[in-house]
Length: 380
Image (cartoon, rainbow, N blue to C red; front, side, top):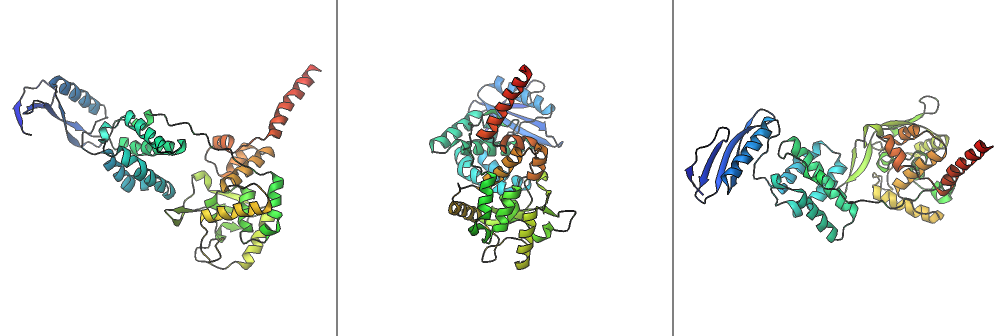
């Protein structure tokens, strides 16, 4: 609609005109972080409101925090983010998860909202809709965190002035209780005939001796095995095999701390030597393959592991719970948390302490009994 008349503007107001529909429109220029200038435009019913907004936003631009008034929707930005920004930041498996949540929740529920007008209330409504659709707290949490990751990059690009997702508290998520094996149960599993004679015996041995991540053990190559290095030899963890959108991808490890050398234990050495004798050369140099000589899908490994555990008469474990089991046994053996952190490849010691220690009733009893004994000795 064409503008009808122009009003004299005060100093610093920019350009303000009254449109033929009676509303006031303000135009002004802001300087972006890279030095370029961008023309902005706002429209309101009240002229005073236009002046106040323009002055406030020009002041923010002078301080290095310009507000971009473009017509981009949240959906359009999320599509741009997932296609051009996120792939250069996160691992493929994380990118796949972000795509899933963008397409399933974020775009359908927030896509029509202009990016610069996205408010905490929009996010709360989205979280409530996800809950009403029968999804649990963890799904809601990931949806909110995915949006937060996208808005963090929008903030860097000066598309928005704040990350509104961070203003909304995600729901509390309480993970289900983990199952762990005792050292006796590990021995029972590894010493059973069905496991010792299984094609993946070495694989299960590595999982239960070192607590490797699933992708780490599946990504092991023969060139990562140094039998004659030092006194015991080492296993070098350098890559991971992961499933992304139904395809297997060899890629980087989770963090820098995941790159590590592990000493070759005696029973592991024996199993490695035996496996190497019958190994068939493959172009990928991976140690573990299916009966059809293909790399192993992570889900297939979990199915086999649970089946064998049930056959032996042991409670089923996930691969992550097997890793948890190893960490727990390290703690019970008196290993220093820093040593456990290095062996498990945790980025932070906090992870080792908070998420990979599983005190059982016996450990708690011993801890409490030690206090009583100490108090008793002091009384004497």
